[in-house]
Image (cartoon, rainbow, N blue to C red; front, top):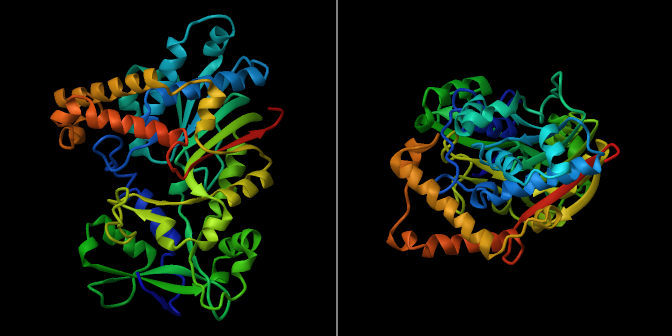
Amino acid sequence: MPHANSSTPTQLPSYRDFVDDALFHPRWGYYSTGQVRFGDGGHYDTFPIALSPHFGRMVARLAYRTWRRLGQPRRFEICELGAGNGQLCQDTLLAIDLAPRRGAWTQFARACRYRIVERSPALIARQRQALGPLANRVDWLEADLAQAPAHVAGMAACGLIIANEVLDCLAHQKVVPAGDGPPRVAFVEARKGGEGKPLTREQLNRAMAAGGRADLQLQEVLRPMVEMPDVDGFVRRHYPELITPWHGKVKPYFACPAYGELMRNTGALYKRAEAIWIDYGDLRDFHLRASAKLKEFAGPPRSGASVYDDPGRDDITFMVDFSAVAEEAEAAGWRVVNYGGQRELSRRSGIRLDERAAAEILDYRMVRWMLAVVGVGAEKEWRQSSLTWDKKAARGGRVRDDVRRTIDEFLGRRQSFFRVVVLRRGKA
């Protein structure tokens, strides 16, 4: 979308506000309306689904080892931030139940409780439905820790926080370096039929909720970064070189001040904890040199869709800036103990993704497909209309190859932008 300089008042929605509303507005946001489709045939897949049930087994084993390292407390929580369709929670709880009950594992199973922190009420409902009887062993906390702290009475003092693809869907602010002065930030100018006064954020939300997408014309306008003090402070802390004119080398940066708030608020959940953040992203050098299209994504993977093509019906995500994440985590009192590829989860947990594991993952995919055929499961309505199995797949060829590719990517045998950051807090 072209940029235009403008003196439009800042009552216009910022790029960050527009993205956040497109994802989470209660009446038209992608996650809030329950339209998101997870897994095979859906809008996108995630490793906890693609590697089910082994990803959950890794989390269960990591939780056990964290519990041991913390001195085997009588109460311990696995806390998942943004639990999607509940698959990881289900696999983790089943892994705890099905493991041989010997020695310390029995004590761990008795001490452990699962907690989900979820912003979207619609996703909480889907998670409860998907978990069935297992939902009785889960505590839900409806909160957005990227915006405000949240704590409930009765939480354990120790825990393992697991966050898979949470950072990438935080609302980022688009910062455009200038060749002739300080950076500017993007706001969204929306007009009905391309005419009249631009809509305020409230007016735009009403129009989107009423289904008025087709009648709206959206354009980005640029304003001085100082109009957004939190973004200005974030850029000055992490990327002071963007403040200096770039003499025409304009490559937008997507700033996310919410990193800091999220790290502070997750740090307040437990006195002693380990946190595992899994997402796709890279370090500061990438974010300085890469074009916007390599850092901002909308719609299904590799679709090339724009943030403005179908807001509210498309997912919107960003390449995570792990340099900024680490700095904000340390400022919030966390210690960074590891940064690297996803294979670290396999190494730390002791769960091997070998040929036997690949065969079991394939079996689980086939079972999910057959359940969709007969109309069983919380997502049967859309899965039945999205079946992609064919004769070749039924013989295991295409699906088996996909399982192997997924494992190879997870283990770093194929190129992947997914990274893992392990943090610790307190005497952990």
